[in-house]
Image (cartoon, rainbow, N blue to C red):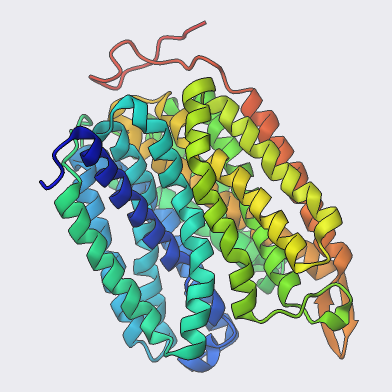
Length: 479
C-alpha cells in the first residue's frame, strides 16, 4: 500500500467509494438528454424507447436488496467488485446497440450496479474509524445526487458534439477504473451474517416490486384506469403480503422484517420515501420550466445543454454541504440532521413561489433543495445502521435505498398526473401550465414538511441488542 497512515488509508477508501457511487448514479441519468432521439437512434417507437429508462429503475430496485444481502453473507468488498461487472458489460452492450432490444439489456445491466451505493455505505462502518464515519456516509449518500447532476451537462455535450456511443464507452472505462481502484484500495470486510440467500424471497420481492414500479411508472401512458395498470397495482400488495409471510417464517430471510419493524428503522424508511419524492419532484419541474418556450410566458427557452448546465451547480452544492451534515450528525445525532435537511428542502420548494420566473431563480431553488437533500441523505443510512445488527447493515441499507427509489417513482407519477391535468394550448400543442408547475412545487413542499414530521417521531435512543456486533438477535428495548 502506498498510504502509510490510517488517516491516509481512510481517505483513500472514502474517495474510492464516493467515486464509485458517483459513477453508478451517472449511468442512471446519462440517457436522459437522449430521450427525444432514442426512437430514431434505435429504430423503435416512443413506447419502446421508454423502456430504456424504465428497465434501469426496475433492475436497480430488484437487485439492490439482493446485492446487500450477498454483501452481508460473502463480504462487501467482494460484492462491490462483482457489481462493477454488470456496469462494464451493460455499458459495452449499450455502446454497440443498434436496436432497442440490446440497449434495454445493457441499461438493465447498468441498473444492477446501483447497489454499490448502499453497499459502500455499509462497508464504511466496517472500515473507517468512528470519528470519520458520519462525514464519509454523508459524502457517499450524496454521490447519487452528484452523479445525476453532472450527468446532464456531460451527456448533453457529448450527444451534441460527438457520437452518443461515446457516452457508453466512457462509462465502461469509468466502471473498469473503479473496479481497479476497489481492488487496490478497499480492504476486505468481515462477514458476520450466516445462512444462505433466500431465493424464494428474491423472486417474491422482485415480482412485487416489478408490479408496483411498472404500474406507477407507466400508469400515465397506459391510463390509470386501464386493465394493465389496475392489475399491476392490485397484484403488487398481494404479492408483497405473501412475500412478507414467507420472510417471517425464514431463519435467514432476504430482509429481516422484524428488524425493519423497529420504530427507528420503520420511520427512517418512511421518511426516505418522502425525501426521495421531494428529491425528484423539483428536478422534474425545474428542467421542464427551463426548456419550455418563452412564448408560454413562464418557460425560459433554454436548450437541453443549457438547462443541464444550469442544473449542474446544484450537484456541487450537495457535495459541499455533505460534510456539514456529517458534522451535525456527529454533534447532535442523525435524527436532527434528517429533520434539518427535510426543512431545508421545504424551504427550497417554498422559495419557488417567488423564484420560478427566471433562470437564476430556478438555480437558487435547485441549490437550496439539493442542499437539504445532501444533508438528509447522509442522515438516513446513519439512522439505519444505528438500529440494526452489524450482520445486517448492507441488507438494511439496501432496503432503505429501495425505499428512496419507490419515493422517486411515486414522485414522477404524481408530477405527471398533475401536469397532465393542468395544461394550456400553445401553437396547436398542449403544454403543462404555470399553475401546474406551482402546484407540483407546493406538493413537494408539503411532502418535505411531512418528512420532517416523520423524522421528529424517530426515537432518540434506538433499540439495540446487547451483543449486536457479534450476532443478530432480538433487540432489548431501551426506554
